[in-house]
Image 1: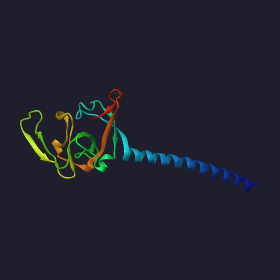
Image 2 (image 1 turned 60 degrees about the vertical axis):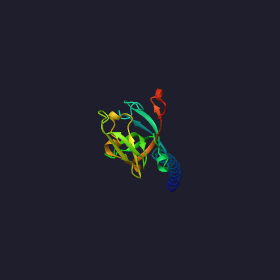
Image 3 (image 1 turned 90 degrees about the vertical axis):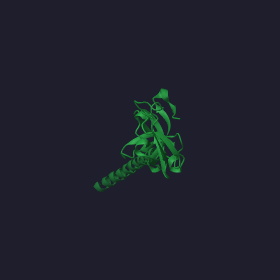
Image 4 (image 1 turned 90 degrees about the horizontal axis):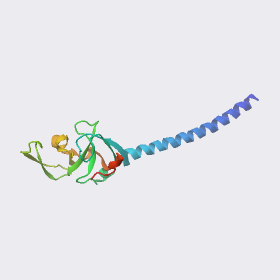
Length: 169
């Protein structure tokens, strides 16, 4: 009689364990899909600071960033991109692409004074990035052309604050 009761409990436990495993498996698959989507397809990113004024707000915006264009060479002049900082790889910076490989750029060495200019040619495999606010941006004028592989994504549109919803062009 005791053995029958133990077998009955084991059957119940086995059914409960199978059901729990099925639910955990669904949750795990969903989390994997969420990770892949966020890391490799599209993600939301909070950006703030003065370097992209007036395009982005000083107090911060939430932008949708897609992570496919740069992998297929679909980044162009004027695109706003998320870039891993060449000076601090733990930081991400948001800048606009102003030069692609082979382009010659001339810019003021000091935008405040503006009396001397510097010319550079963007080398192969690099881009030239600058913030829209020349007076408050640390960008390619300070650290030179940025390797293309430091680009993490292309900003699609601003989603927050709601009154500023729309394209970043």
